[in-house]
Length: 483
Image 1 (cartoon, helix red, strand yellow):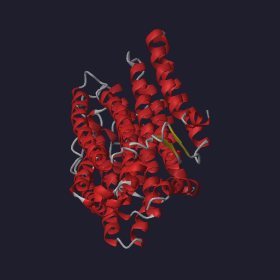
Image 2 (tube, rainbow, N blue to C red):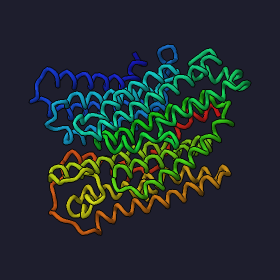
Image 3 (cartoon, rainbow, N blue to C red):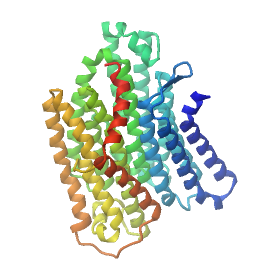
Image 4 (cartoon, one colour):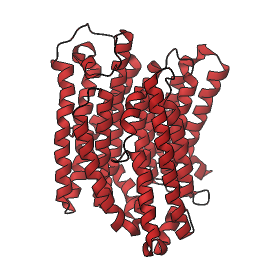
């Protein structure tokens, strides 16, 4: 019974998804307005259960699931993102006949992500990974009459299928060599993998598989089109949630299971981190679509977080883990702000093929002051400007990189952060300094509520970092134990 209580957050999310689907199917269109509130309540209840049992530690179901501070931390990230997306979607999905399907997919995607965080076996991890992925494939193409949305879903599906195949093949090599899919068991049977080429081949396949999910260059090609074509609230879930699922899975596989092969994969992650952060920032400079700019920014952010795999010290892992929470607030908030602007553009029936075009953000500071203010804080946080979550997480990660002697990597990361400030500042200039037409508009309450939650998270981590750093250190201690 105690063990099942530790899985209460997953149970709550699954039951909420089923309740939402049942009400939507059997209760008629009049009840669909409450589905967003039910989904939000479910996320809040699950979040409360995670926080209440954050320091718990237990193995369940023949040691295939592990509840520990690492899994609890990432469940916290996933539930925060799901909460923000659920609230914002109340406005996005209103008057849609498929409301129950949308919320059910969001909740079951979150359910899959949470099980990835608890997975202690590669097969459980893979199945949970695909549960979350399949739900997000459908969400990316939710706007069935929008060609961009359909294209986004197709590209995401094809690249996701390829990454799943590579991941599964890598897992098969690990299993063939060690005779187990248990993550701790693999770590105890590494002699075969370290003594022949099978280990190197497994690392290549696993890095490629996780690289697609994380959107590391050169495995990133699906991300810009998918983030731009998907509904903005779905882009928030993909960038702020789904990507973190890949990170926690990679943490478990490389740092716990394959630590004995670190000499091989650390160099690979160093090269990928540098290329990813540089490419993402350079290409973002020329983007006129704000969602596409945020997509390339997200690619660059993945490069920063990947530095934790290279440095591999307790403080670097703490910084990388804290960065995932900070990025969840920053990126989810930024995409929700774009969703609010797109809603305004569509409502005003402007003739534009790209509703998130930079020109549509002209004068946003006067037309939608709350949205503009929140978006300004989010993009400056992404650039690492104090006192925000982005600054604090970058400070811990970059300073630990310098302390470990990898000054060159820290310098490249700092220069990339400085470069990113250009395209973030350009967006702010459009919102506050460019001439515009039209009067102040009424900002939808659900979007504003989601933005304010994100804003509080970004500022809380920046102004009061101690409790967040402490729980990130607890999460990192699970990984540090094997180093």
